[in-house]
Length: 73
Image (cartoon, rainbow, N blue to C red; front, top):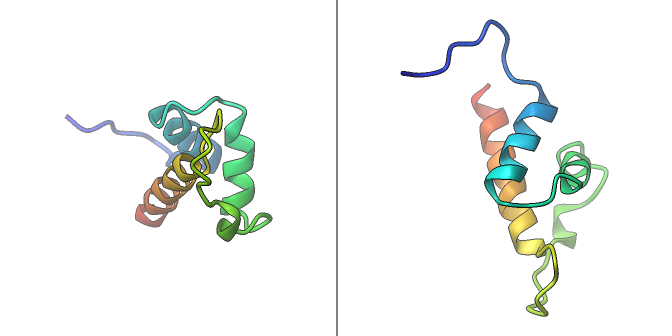
């Protein structure tokens, strides 16, 4: 059964949901929001294969999932 809501999810709710889905730290949500708002270019998210604590590729995948979710609404 689908979840019925009186109001659609806010941008912040969608972002935090996707950040947690990708097992990213909650602190990453602010960066993803900056990506969504266009304050940071998505071109800056390039995986360098150095084993970063928070990989840019994972952030990019999260960002794309957020964009897709927001386009549905």
